[in-house]
Image 1 (spheres, chains in turn yellow, purple):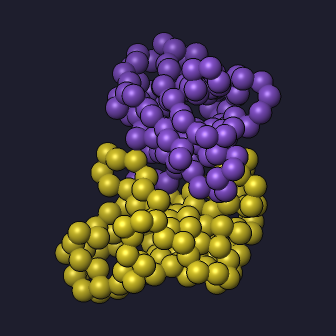
Image 2 (cartoon, each protein chain N blue to C red; image 1 turned 180 degrees about the vertical axis):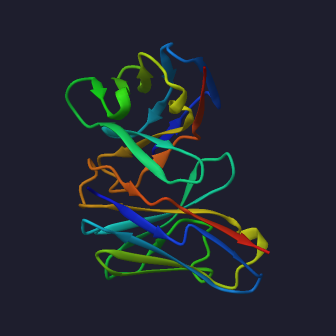
Length: 117
Length: 114
């Protein structure tokens, strides 16, 4: 149980294009979803927290106009990287929580490797 | 504020030997502690957690971790390492009073050699 599907797993696109990444909870309802960015050989950096039906909360230093997050349902959150540039190339990972109680683990998607040419 | 430290970037161990991956934490209240494993180009897989109760927690794939409140540590252990255990391991903490946000350590790469 508690499977999170992230799509696509790999994206290569030209500079200036926008890229949408989907994160779906397949067998549970995710009240909260998280978006992380991971640089090579580094830890996860939390970008934003999204709760279903409300605006995402962005971490300091993360451009909300650059990284658009939508959490329209209890099973789907999307991250759109707008006007992507090579410096946006990274590994993006989403996770989801089943409840609002912090004793439950987050469940992670398999990540999306974004390469901007 | 909450923080996690994994003092070793890499741990090398021979197959069949016991392994330990170290983690220390800092929270203002009571901690929820988690270990995750990451294989190349994959997301994180949950291994085990400490919430309350017994200080020794058993998790997936034969891993266990010991919560030590006085040393604010939560080291990951396994009695006998497998080559397939080679991966990146993350310790994470969540303060009881800080909502759902997890804070991750920097990660430790475990290399198990045959």
